[in-house]
Image (cartoon, rainbow, N blue to C red; front, top):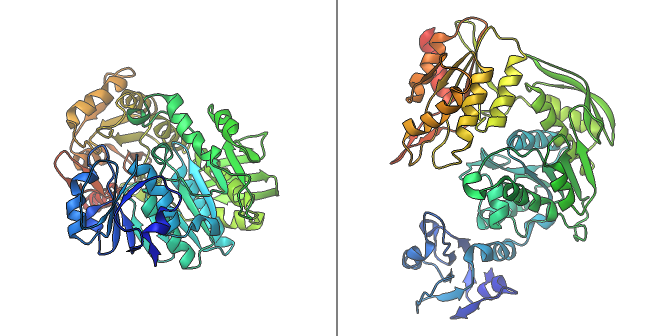
Length: 491
């Protein structure tokens, strides 16, 4: 049992009340407070935890951390300048600094993080390493799996998960590290061993405002790689040299760097690459040797993800044989180029692509399969970067034969206004061959009615998500389930 005084050691703070009280848990959500917990009142964009201090105390909180003036005689009050920043160091101490016991792999970038994390997990499994994974789809270790509310969770949940991995005998953890998490300090105190940069394309400018600020947030992962760490594991940066922002990541790193690119020259690259409907075949060239690889994943951008995963694993001294075995045995990634067959002979592909670059890459990969026609269904999320909407519309119009613009997660915005933003880009390319159908199920149904044998229907934007966020509620909606149901009706 850890006392409040132990948890607060080294943290600049003002404490009113006893420090020697035992703390059972650290939480920032008052609804999750149990007797003996330390409640941290975080001031967020949509919620202010200070408004829930009384509720937390009523639920049994033994101490409360605040950044505003709060007076309660029944519990110890800890005052800090910024509760969000203070959450990381106290969580690290409470859960015993678990990243010190794990090989920590952090992956950052706009696209490809999830697939790369699945590939590294498969490689580590081939090497016999029990591995935790935290990312956009879920947080998982062994038979335990929970849906992910954030790509990278708040520090208390992050450290809790790492602590559980250590306690249950885990050897490594692979994390998708979002720019929000880096900017807001959620991964402070995590001792990463390998950091991977996949790419940087326009996204999240509603938060970062400029691409330079977005890149600077990503670069913090590489700055965090500590060459003087007490850990015995190798330190390495693995960076996509084909990306224009690569050198910004290189400049931030203080550890050895491996660059990867599709065709070389680089530390890791693919040679004699063949991509078709079965996946890809190539020679993997690496600092640890050369081996042929046959991957079931579609598209040359997934070859890039494979190179990134190979670099991360090799940097931690996994054998090249285990790397190849992992790359070849992975069956797929939920909502990433996930394929469904239809009774009419066309193919349905569900993908998470929700940026212009990701959408272009997916459509380009599908074009290389030489479909008779490509029909694309997609929308854009509300309360997010508006400037990418016409860019996505333009990309879809350039690379698809038919385009159906629909609703994604509109959140508080009017779906029709979002669609109009997308239509601006579509009309830069064409004035016909597209429709706006805001009901997402009806949009998918329409795409299927247009498709014939030999066509590909791409349903983009939501991928693995099994919900749709509307202005007043969140409803169940899974592109894959809806598509399968509509395909079954056709048969």
